[in-house]
Length: 314
Image (cartoon, rainbow, N blue to C red; front, side, top):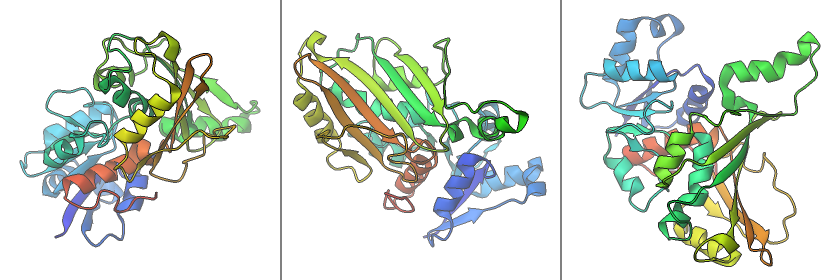
Protein backbone atom coordinates (compact mmCIF):
# COMPACT_ATOMS: atom_id res chain seq x y z
CA UNK A 1 0.00 0.00 0.00
CA UNK A 2 1.29 3.45 -0.94
CA UNK A 3 0.68 6.42 1.35
CA UNK A 4 0.44 9.91 -0.11
CA UNK A 5 2.39 12.42 2.01
CA UNK A 6 2.40 16.20 1.60
CA UNK A 7 5.06 18.20 3.48
CA UNK A 8 3.69 21.72 3.88
CA UNK A 9 6.80 23.81 4.36
CA UNK A 10 9.15 21.40 2.62
CA UNK A 11 11.66 24.14 1.79
CA UNK A 12 12.51 24.86 5.45
CA UNK A 13 15.21 23.16 7.48
CA UNK A 14 12.95 20.53 9.07
CA UNK A 15 10.92 20.00 5.91
CA UNK A 16 14.01 19.31 3.84
CA UNK A 17 15.25 16.80 6.42
CA UNK A 18 11.89 14.99 6.43
CA UNK A 19 11.82 14.86 2.64
CA UNK A 20 15.32 13.40 2.60
CA UNK A 21 14.17 10.58 4.91
CA UNK A 22 11.09 9.83 2.78
CA UNK A 23 12.47 10.06 -0.75
CA UNK A 24 13.03 6.73 -2.42
CA UNK A 25 10.74 4.77 -0.10
CA UNK A 26 8.42 2.56 -2.15
CA UNK A 27 5.58 2.78 0.35
CA UNK A 28 5.60 6.61 0.30
CA UNK A 29 4.37 8.85 -2.53
CA UNK A 30 5.36 12.46 -1.95
CA UNK A 31 2.91 15.14 -3.06
CA UNK A 32 5.20 17.93 -4.26
CA UNK A 33 4.33 21.49 -5.24
CA UNK A 34 6.74 23.71 -7.13
CA UNK A 35 7.49 27.17 -5.76
CA UNK A 36 4.73 28.87 -7.75
CA UNK A 37 2.07 26.31 -6.84
CA UNK A 38 3.15 26.36 -3.21
CA UNK A 39 2.18 30.02 -3.04
CA UNK A 40 -1.19 29.39 -4.71
CA UNK A 41 -3.82 28.95 -1.96
CA UNK A 42 -6.12 26.75 -4.05
CA UNK A 43 -3.34 24.38 -5.14
CA UNK A 44 -1.98 24.20 -1.63
CA UNK A 45 -5.44 23.44 -0.24
CA UNK A 46 -5.89 20.74 -2.88
CA UNK A 47 -2.59 19.13 -1.85
CA UNK A 48 -3.54 19.27 1.84
CA UNK A 49 -6.83 17.50 1.13
CA UNK A 50 -5.46 14.98 -1.37
CA UNK A 51 -2.84 13.56 0.97
CA UNK A 52 -3.24 10.63 3.33
CA UNK A 53 -0.78 12.33 5.65
CA UNK A 54 0.18 15.98 5.93
CA UNK A 55 3.34 17.03 7.79
CA UNK A 56 3.33 20.71 8.73
CA UNK A 57 6.73 22.40 8.90
CA UNK A 58 5.44 25.93 9.35
CA UNK A 59 5.37 28.80 11.86
CA UNK A 60 2.65 28.38 14.47
CA UNK A 61 0.07 30.72 12.91
CA UNK A 62 0.55 29.19 9.46
CA UNK A 63 0.20 25.68 10.92
CA UNK A 64 -3.12 26.60 12.54
CA UNK A 65 -4.26 28.09 9.23
CA UNK A 66 -3.25 24.95 7.34
CA UNK A 67 -5.23 22.69 9.66
CA UNK A 68 -8.30 24.88 9.08
CA UNK A 69 -7.88 24.32 5.33
CA UNK A 70 -8.16 20.54 5.65
CA UNK A 71 -11.73 19.43 4.93
CA UNK A 72 -11.00 15.80 4.05
CA UNK A 73 -11.77 13.74 7.19
CA UNK A 74 -9.41 11.02 5.99
CA UNK A 75 -6.38 13.32 5.95
CA UNK A 76 -4.18 12.82 9.02
CA UNK A 77 -1.82 15.50 10.30
CA UNK A 78 1.58 15.67 11.96
CA UNK A 79 2.39 19.21 13.10
CA UNK A 80 6.08 19.97 13.68
CA UNK A 81 5.34 23.48 14.99
CA UNK A 82 4.68 24.52 18.58
CA UNK A 83 1.05 25.32 17.84
CA UNK A 84 -0.64 22.13 19.04
CA UNK A 85 1.72 20.54 21.57
CA UNK A 86 -0.54 21.24 24.53
CA UNK A 87 -3.81 21.56 22.55
CA UNK A 88 -6.91 19.51 23.23
CA UNK A 89 -7.66 16.94 20.54
CA UNK A 90 -4.01 16.47 19.61
CA UNK A 91 -1.91 13.44 20.51
CA UNK A 92 1.62 14.18 21.65
CA UNK A 93 4.01 12.56 19.20
CA UNK A 94 6.69 11.26 21.53
CA UNK A 95 6.24 7.53 21.03
CA UNK A 96 8.40 6.56 24.02
CA UNK A 97 6.76 8.96 26.50
CA UNK A 98 4.33 6.43 28.00
CA UNK A 99 3.85 2.67 27.53
CA UNK A 100 0.63 3.41 25.64
CA UNK A 101 1.87 6.41 23.63
CA UNK A 102 2.77 4.56 20.44
CA UNK A 103 -0.70 3.01 20.29
CA UNK A 104 -2.27 6.43 20.84
CA UNK A 105 -0.24 7.87 17.96
CA UNK A 106 -1.20 4.97 15.70
CA UNK A 107 -4.89 5.68 16.27
CA UNK A 108 -4.71 9.49 16.13
CA UNK A 109 -5.75 11.81 13.35
CA UNK A 110 -3.88 14.82 14.75
CA UNK A 111 -0.36 14.38 16.14
CA UNK A 112 1.88 17.15 17.46
CA UNK A 113 5.60 16.59 17.03
CA UNK A 114 7.54 17.28 20.26
CA UNK A 115 10.05 20.08 20.61
CA UNK A 116 13.72 19.15 20.53
CA UNK A 117 14.50 20.34 24.06
CA UNK A 118 11.37 18.72 25.56
CA UNK A 119 12.32 15.42 23.89
CA UNK A 120 15.55 15.20 25.89
CA UNK A 121 13.98 16.53 29.08
CA UNK A 122 10.91 14.30 29.02
CA UNK A 123 12.92 11.21 28.12
CA UNK A 124 14.98 11.72 31.27
CA UNK A 125 12.24 12.84 33.64
CA UNK A 126 8.91 11.26 32.76
CA UNK A 127 9.87 7.63 33.69
CA UNK A 128 11.19 8.84 37.05
CA UNK A 129 8.02 10.81 37.80
CA UNK A 130 5.89 7.87 36.72
CA UNK A 131 7.86 5.54 39.02
CA UNK A 132 7.55 7.94 41.96
CA UNK A 133 11.25 8.80 42.30
CA UNK A 134 10.55 12.47 41.50
CA UNK A 135 7.48 13.92 43.28
CA UNK A 136 5.00 15.70 41.00
CA UNK A 137 5.37 18.89 43.07
CA UNK A 138 9.18 18.96 42.78
CA UNK A 139 10.82 21.94 41.05
CA UNK A 140 13.32 20.86 38.41
CA UNK A 141 15.87 22.78 36.37
CA UNK A 142 17.14 21.86 32.93
CA UNK A 143 20.20 23.10 31.07
CA UNK A 144 20.27 22.49 27.34
CA UNK A 145 22.42 23.51 24.41
CA UNK A 146 21.52 23.09 20.74
CA UNK A 147 23.28 23.45 17.45
CA UNK A 148 22.30 26.66 15.71
CA UNK A 149 20.22 24.92 13.03
CA UNK A 150 17.54 24.56 15.71
CA UNK A 151 16.77 28.26 15.36
CA UNK A 152 15.83 27.97 11.69
CA UNK A 153 16.94 30.22 8.85
CA UNK A 154 17.29 33.37 10.95
CA UNK A 155 19.65 31.82 13.49
CA UNK A 156 21.56 29.93 10.81
CA UNK A 157 22.15 33.23 9.02
CA UNK A 158 23.19 34.89 12.27
CA UNK A 159 25.84 32.29 13.06
CA UNK A 160 27.11 31.77 9.53
CA UNK A 161 27.15 35.40 8.35
CA UNK A 162 28.10 37.45 11.39
CA UNK A 163 31.83 37.43 10.62
CA UNK A 164 31.14 38.97 7.22
CA UNK A 165 30.35 42.21 9.04
CA UNK A 166 33.48 42.09 11.13
CA UNK A 167 31.77 40.65 14.23
CA UNK A 168 33.58 38.26 16.51
CA UNK A 169 32.33 34.71 16.22
CA UNK A 170 29.92 33.71 18.98
CA UNK A 171 30.89 30.34 20.44
CA UNK A 172 28.09 29.95 22.98
CA UNK A 173 25.04 32.07 23.70
CA UNK A 174 22.43 31.54 26.42
CA UNK A 175 18.95 32.74 25.51
CA UNK A 176 15.41 32.54 26.88
CA UNK A 177 16.67 34.61 29.79
CA UNK A 178 13.15 35.69 30.77
CA UNK A 179 12.34 32.05 31.60
CA UNK A 180 9.37 32.16 29.23
CA UNK A 181 10.59 29.85 26.46
CA UNK A 182 7.73 28.47 24.36
CA UNK A 183 8.76 24.86 25.09
CA UNK A 184 8.10 25.15 28.83
CA UNK A 185 4.32 24.44 28.72
CA UNK A 186 4.81 21.11 26.95
CA UNK A 187 7.68 20.21 29.28
CA UNK A 188 5.44 20.73 32.30
CA UNK A 189 2.29 19.16 30.87
CA UNK A 190 3.80 15.99 29.45
CA UNK A 191 6.07 15.40 32.45
CA UNK A 192 2.83 15.65 34.50
CA UNK A 193 4.47 18.00 36.98
CA UNK A 194 2.74 20.69 39.03
CA UNK A 195 5.40 23.33 38.36
CA UNK A 196 7.21 24.40 35.19
CA UNK A 197 10.91 23.59 35.11
CA UNK A 198 13.51 26.34 35.26
CA UNK A 199 14.63 26.07 31.66
CA UNK A 200 18.04 27.42 30.62
CA UNK A 201 18.59 26.97 26.87
CA UNK A 202 21.65 28.00 24.90
CA UNK A 203 22.96 27.76 21.37
CA UNK A 204 26.50 26.75 20.38
CA UNK A 205 28.58 27.21 17.25
CA UNK A 206 27.90 23.78 15.81
CA UNK A 207 25.31 23.19 13.10
CA UNK A 208 23.48 20.23 14.64
CA UNK A 209 23.39 18.23 17.83
CA UNK A 210 22.00 18.79 21.30
CA UNK A 211 22.79 18.03 24.93
CA UNK A 212 20.13 18.27 27.65
CA UNK A 213 20.98 18.05 31.36
CA UNK A 214 18.81 17.74 34.46
CA UNK A 215 20.53 17.89 37.87
CA UNK A 216 18.94 15.82 40.65
CA UNK A 217 19.72 16.09 44.38
CA UNK A 218 19.13 12.42 45.14
CA UNK A 219 19.80 12.96 48.85
CA UNK A 220 16.91 15.44 49.05
CA UNK A 221 14.31 13.39 47.19
CA UNK A 222 11.81 11.64 49.51
CA UNK A 223 12.81 8.13 48.39
CA UNK A 224 16.55 8.97 48.20
CA UNK A 225 17.19 6.82 45.11
CA UNK A 226 20.73 5.84 44.21
CA UNK A 227 22.45 6.50 40.90
CA UNK A 228 22.07 2.81 40.06
CA UNK A 229 18.35 2.93 40.84
CA UNK A 230 17.82 5.92 38.56
CA UNK A 231 19.78 4.32 35.73
CA UNK A 232 17.86 1.05 36.15
CA UNK A 233 14.53 2.88 36.00
CA UNK A 234 15.49 4.58 32.73
CA UNK A 235 16.88 1.35 31.28
CA UNK A 236 13.66 -0.46 32.09
CA UNK A 237 11.52 2.31 30.57
CA UNK A 238 13.30 2.09 27.21
CA UNK A 239 14.34 -1.57 27.12
CA UNK A 240 12.18 -2.28 24.07
CA UNK A 241 12.93 0.92 22.15
CA UNK A 242 15.02 0.73 18.98
CA UNK A 243 15.55 4.50 19.10
CA UNK A 244 16.12 5.49 22.75
CA UNK A 245 19.12 3.90 24.41
CA UNK A 246 20.41 4.14 27.98
CA UNK A 247 24.16 3.73 28.19
CA UNK A 248 26.17 3.26 31.40
CA UNK A 249 28.21 6.31 32.33
CA UNK A 250 31.18 4.07 33.09
CA UNK A 251 34.48 5.83 32.73
CA UNK A 252 33.26 8.38 30.20
CA UNK A 253 34.82 11.70 31.10
CA UNK A 254 33.06 13.93 28.58
CA UNK A 255 29.84 14.21 26.61
CA UNK A 256 29.82 16.10 23.31
CA UNK A 257 26.93 18.02 21.80
CA UNK A 258 27.65 16.21 18.53
CA UNK A 259 27.50 12.68 20.02
CA UNK A 260 24.23 11.82 18.23
CA UNK A 261 24.38 14.42 15.46
CA UNK A 262 23.47 13.01 12.07
CA UNK A 263 21.29 10.27 13.60
CA UNK A 264 17.67 9.87 14.69
CA UNK A 265 18.48 8.18 18.00
CA UNK A 266 18.38 9.51 21.55
CA UNK A 267 21.01 8.57 24.13
CA UNK A 268 20.55 8.85 27.90
CA UNK A 269 23.18 8.57 30.63
CA UNK A 270 23.22 8.96 34.41
CA UNK A 271 26.32 10.62 35.87
CA UNK A 272 26.83 11.71 39.44
CA UNK A 273 28.54 11.49 42.80
CA UNK A 274 27.21 8.66 44.97
CA UNK A 275 28.82 9.97 48.17
CA UNK A 276 27.19 13.37 47.79
CA UNK A 277 23.91 11.96 46.57
CA UNK A 278 23.94 14.12 43.43
CA UNK A 279 23.09 13.12 39.86
CA UNK A 280 23.42 14.65 36.42
CA UNK A 281 20.97 13.16 33.94
CA UNK A 282 22.22 13.73 30.41
CA UNK A 283 20.49 13.28 27.05
CA UNK A 284 22.14 13.72 23.66
CA UNK A 285 20.25 13.86 20.38
CA UNK A 286 20.23 15.59 17.02
CA UNK A 287 18.00 18.67 17.16
CA UNK A 288 17.10 17.99 13.50
CA UNK A 289 16.80 14.21 14.00
CA UNK A 290 14.92 12.81 16.99
CA UNK A 291 14.34 16.45 17.91
CA UNK A 292 12.45 17.27 14.71
CA UNK A 293 12.50 15.46 11.34
CA UNK A 294 13.34 12.02 12.70
CA UNK A 295 10.46 12.20 15.17
CA UNK A 296 8.05 13.29 12.43
CA UNK A 297 9.04 10.35 10.23
CA UNK A 298 8.81 7.96 13.19
CA UNK A 299 5.28 9.25 13.88
CA UNK A 300 4.35 8.89 10.22
CA UNK A 301 5.60 5.31 10.23
CA UNK A 302 3.56 4.49 13.33
CA UNK A 303 0.40 6.11 11.98
CA UNK A 304 0.76 4.30 8.65
CA UNK A 305 1.35 0.92 10.31
CA UNK A 306 4.93 0.68 9.09
CA UNK A 307 8.17 -0.22 10.86
CA UNK A 308 8.73 2.81 13.11
CA UNK A 309 12.42 2.97 12.20
CA UNK A 310 11.91 2.99 8.41
CA UNK A 311 13.92 5.79 6.81
CA UNK A 312 15.73 6.63 10.07
CA UNK A 313 19.44 6.65 10.75
CA UNK A 314 20.23 4.84 13.98
